[in-house]
Amino acid sequence: VTNLLPSQYGNVFLYQLEAIATDTITNDAIIEIEKIESITDYTKIKIENAKIKYNDKINEEPQIMVVNKDINKFINLKDYKTKEELSIEDGIILTEKLAFLLNVKVGDFVEIENSFGSNQKMKISGIAENYLQHYIYMNESTYKKYFEEISYNALLLNVKEANGILEKEAEQILSSKYFSKVMVTENTKNMMN
Image (tube, rainbow, N blue to C red; front, side):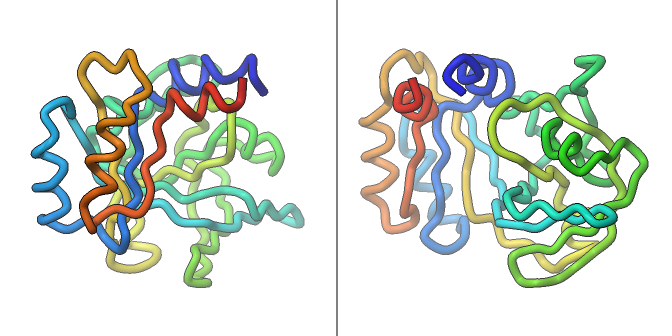
C-alpha cells in the first residue's frame, strides 16, 4: 500500500483537503471557506456508501462520489489504460480495481444501491486509474436521474503553497459549525507510510 500512496495522492487525488459537512454544504459554509486566504479553489461533492452488483458478484466497499464538471482540478480522472482524461458527462465511472473485481468493462450495466437503499441499473462509461479504495463517480444530473435530489456533503479544497501539513487550515475549517471532519491528504499519506 505504501508504494501506491504517491500515485494516489499525487497523480489521482490532486486536492490537499477534504472537508466533511456536519449536514449539507450551505451558502454559509461556503462563506466560511472563502474567508480562508490560503484556499485557492474548492468544489462541492457528495460522498455516500454504496453497494455494486454485476451478475453474481457484489462489492459492498465502494463510495459514490457525485462531482461537478471542474472535478479534474481536484481528481485526475484518467482512463486506466490510455491515460486519456475521462468525461463525467454520462453514465458512471468506476475505479480500476473495482471494475476488475466485478469483471466489468465500459458499456456494461451494473446495479448500484445507494445509502438510502435505492437500486438502479447504470451504464459504465469509463474506468479510471486509481490505487486505493473503490469509487463510483457520476455527475449531479446522473445522480438525480437515478436516485434523488442531491445534497452535497463535502468539499475538496486546493491550497496555495501546500508544503506543510495544513493544520492551520484544518483548524479554521473545523472551528466553524458547518464541518465535522477535515482530512489532510498529506497527513493521510504520512500515516500510511
